[in-house]
Image (cartoon, rainbow, N blue to C red; front, side, top):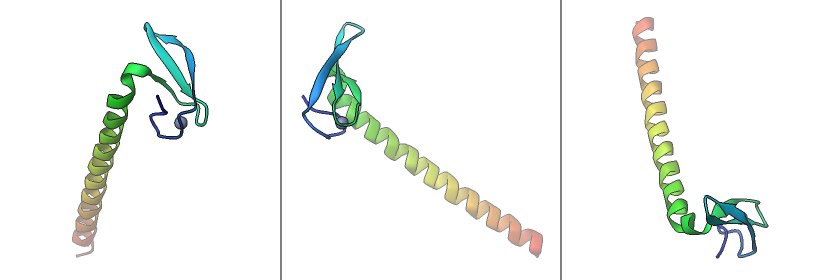
Length: 75
Ligand SMILES: [Zn+2]
């Protein structure tokens, strides 16, 4: 067992959640459930990457639209 963030193997048991063993990372204080660890981490990373990607596209798209409309107004 180790912290899902990869901080350390220094984790403590932290009671139970929904009948599953709950753990807490001593270094960062992150709590996680044993069964959830591997899938949960990769899903988080994927979701964050996707969010950044979508936000990047959205921001750039908005910038482009703003630039076009500004130019049109100035013309
Ligand atoms: Zn940690």
